[in-house]
Length: 126
Ligand SMILES: [Zn+2]
Image (cartoon, rainbow, N blue to C red; front, side, top):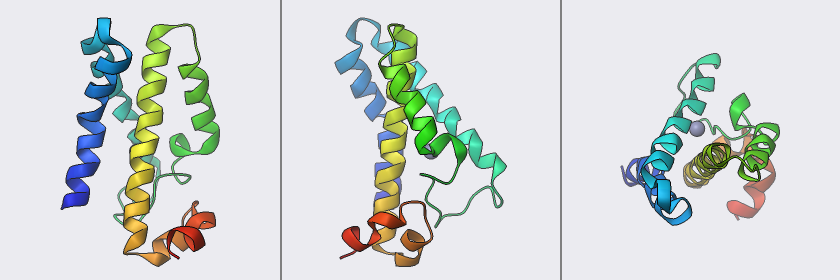
């Protein structure tokens, strides 16, 4: 329950805080654009099953992989403000999903060992 509240607060409310801190003059546009980056989860529709509560998104779904994140970093570094806002939202989405994975791993060691983040299980679950 607490994990779900934290997860969705990070997905919906934290981008509002980021929008005010980073894009103050256009914070409402920035928050709206960052909320639209939730569409990155449409890549889940390509998975079978579409929803698996014990599956870590990071490194599994193609818009949640390291190459995709490099694109998001390039967007953050772009001179185009809209691209920077979208890149910020996408990277923060990845961070939120990463935190959710770590949280899940604390009560599901097998979830960690079968994930793309298995390289950190020994350290995280020590
Ligand atoms: Zn996601």
